[in-house]
Length: 318
Image (cartoon, rainbow, N blue to C red; front, side, top):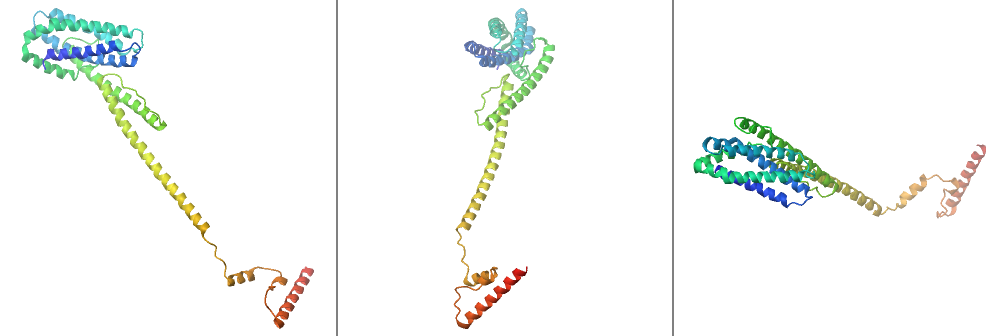
């Protein structure tokens, strides 16, 4: 892709974001904040690659563009200050809409001047092959360009190349850390909602594309890990509950079997033995129902009476 086509595509992307912002409701603060975050990122990258490569090449090779490129640099400078203020301003601030409106007007004016005046002159002078090589270099520079505005940094070579690259690396590290932090907080909220049986909060990550992508990735990974732990705990608790219920049922069955088991009736011999071992008064040790007759009956009666008298005398002496 040649350099001018690349820059025009950037202009179209930003203009779509402008239209999205203009279509948002007056109190659509969350939506507006997300759109402005995208605008900040897109314009920061776009300005960086223009300042590092496109403007220096144009000034060095194309006659009659010095004034317009210097004017473009000043317009970039103003835009960066507005972006830096919007970066830290809440979307419900009374000046937020006003600043975005001014930003949109300035950028649209800047884009019209570039596309109507600067770009045709550069295309005519450089030609297709040179513009393609310049576009490839700008596409490479995009990967290291800052994602945040740095209005105090140099905007011309060689200072902007060094500080721009360093700022780009720092911004991307910051974006990654921001994404990790946001994703971790969102995942924590998801775990709490799962434990309490509530719906997961619908919070969206904010910031640059890198920050949002990292946040979503971290949230998904942590959610998956947390769900695995919850599933493991639930499974172990289920097994323990089943084991406990099984033991209780076994005990109940055993008790029921014991209750249903018929009590064995003692045999006649066992009953007699138990009766002999049970202490009873001597006068009652002879069974009244014993079928004794004749001499045996008299002998038993005499013996019983004698023993009873002896026991009475011992009790009287005591």
